[in-house]
Image (cartoon, rainbow, N blue to C red):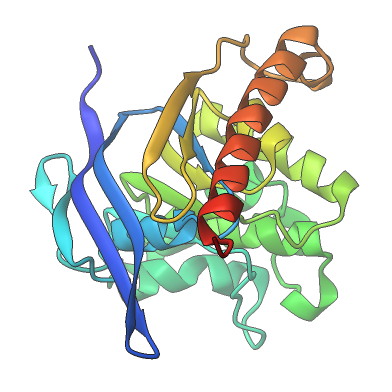
Length: 264
């Protein structure tokens, strides 16, 4: 049995607004096996991105513990790579320079940086654009650079917060296929937050469905679809059945949320 790469227990998060306390998250237990691709989805405002940022060490929780390979998380660290919806590239750095940034920040020797950057330029199909600046790239290529940058410093766990949300539908599909290819090559452990059910099913080994606020785990759906997953898998009846099942869960949660917030 594979090792647990990431686990969260007793995670609670509240926000105070206008003197009122809002419960955002209440995650009793969540874990991801080494090399597993887990997608997280739920109704709007359920706290899924907040949960990811807590796992990344960027947001403090009111209670609970996050562990990476048994080590307690107390803030951001090189064991976790975070990829956001915004490209977050340095406009004054070339593609190669952006990929090198994390390695430079860690004090990696120059020769090692050079060979690592070249490796990920090739893996992501960006080698011929190594001297281009972000302003010269398409949205999909910018996300490839962002992905190459986070993979280059070799984090144990990759946390992805709706990274393809700003892309057009065609580019988004290409990037989904690209991500599954890179995941197959690198064997990374990935937690991927999305609001797109088709994306959650297509990418995930397991889809974790959160309830309406406060976000709790309503159900974990194991996705038994063959890999590698191409277009034929996405068009399959089984894929559609998973999508409809998860959509019904989310719709029920959204309905419960509307009823609980409406005046009586």
